[in-house]
Image (cartoon, rainbow, N blue to C red):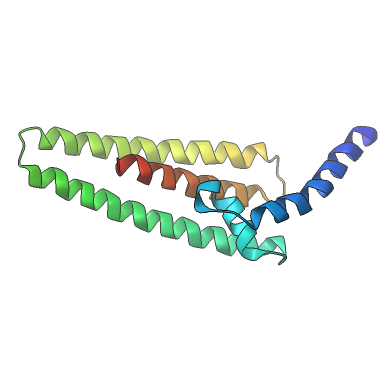
Length: 138
């Protein structure tokens, strides 16, 4: 066990500076975690949580605006299919929320209790919210 742990620890220690250096050029499309690593720079990793919380709140707010606009657009068409489209949108949103919770719980659990597990979960949520917004905007 001890010999297997050393290469893993060495890999983590060596990849941290590389991740930080790469994160300097992070864009929102790179994911919330990379974006926050770029934002916090050389500050302690504990600064990730507030950054990820901020990005998640922004994404939730943007999703709410996108959904409201989409509902309004559907209603304004005056189509006989509007009611079905609104029901489908509501069902889709409900299933998306269930998927997001399950998938991001899986991401947290896959970290096996590591200190960054909740950060991974929050980044997962933010990335999926952003994905949902992009799908609704099509």
